[in-house]
Length: 157
Image 1 (cartoon, rainbow, N blue to C red):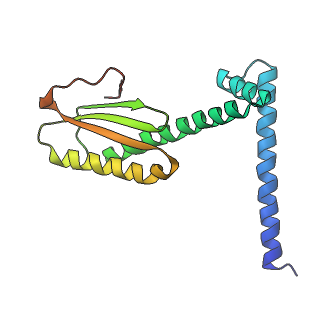
Image 2: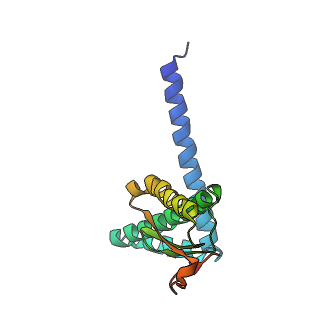
Image 3: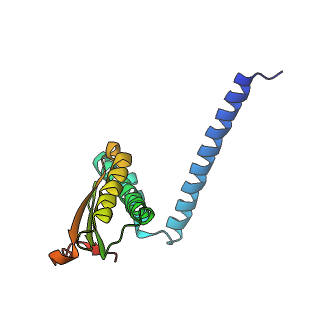
């Protein structure tokens, strides 16, 4: 008779085997693309850095990849939050940093509801990502201020 403990160990071993099998398949796929000249510039750079075995470069690449990952997620979640809160905005722009997302939002004059909801959206995203070292900072202006979006921001709307 198989005990629950034995079943748990078998399940863990199977998960480990599956994970390593997937990793090996991913590496084989990357190797094929590299050998055939079909790999993306990003993939080529990643493997060049890994093969040089320079720890500083490896950790720098890891930091860059994690920044790209988390900043993209923060943008998606911030936009989702402002949509779900029905924020009325005239302009939305972002500036991306290594660990921060700057948002520039223009709303109508005296639209306290949208302003409050933008602050809440920022707080919700920050609550999720601050412990990972990432944060969003919103600049909220009113249309009557007539302040243009700074040139280093990417305008979404």
